[in-house]
Image 1 (cartoon, rainbow, N blue to C red):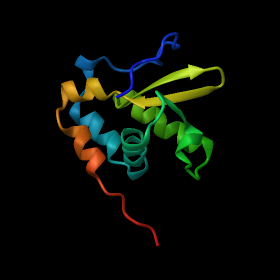
Image 2 (cartoon, rainbow, N blue to C red):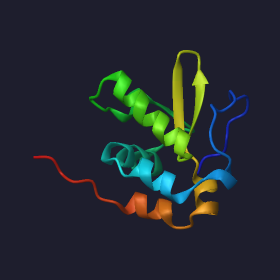
Image 3 (cartoon, rainbow, N blue to C red):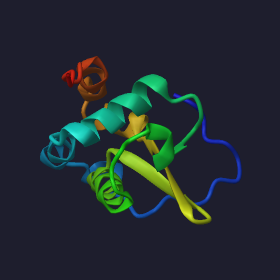
Image 4 (cartoon, one colour):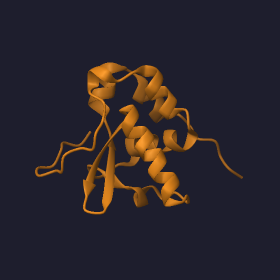
Length: 115
C-alpha cells in the first residue's frame, strides 16, 4: 500500500469506515467488471491512484463512470478529482479493518478467460 502523497485534493463523498456494510461492499464487487477493477488496483497499482484510462477497459465512458461510482459509494474505492479527471485507489486499510481477509480473496480471484 502506497502512502498518500502530500497536497492531494479532498476525496469525493464516501462512507465512513464505521458505515461500511458487508452486503453493500459485496454487492459492488458482485459485478465482474468492478471486481476486475479492484483486483487490478490491488495487484498492479504502481502509483497512488489511477485514472479510468489506466485500466484499458473497452467500455463507454458513461458505463465506466457508473462502475467507478458504485465502487466509491460502496466504500471500496476512494476517488479524488484532478481537474477534469477522477483517480481511484482501493481503501485497503479501511476495508481490512472492517472486513479482514476480504481483499485477499479479491486479489486471489482468477477472472474467467474469454476465448
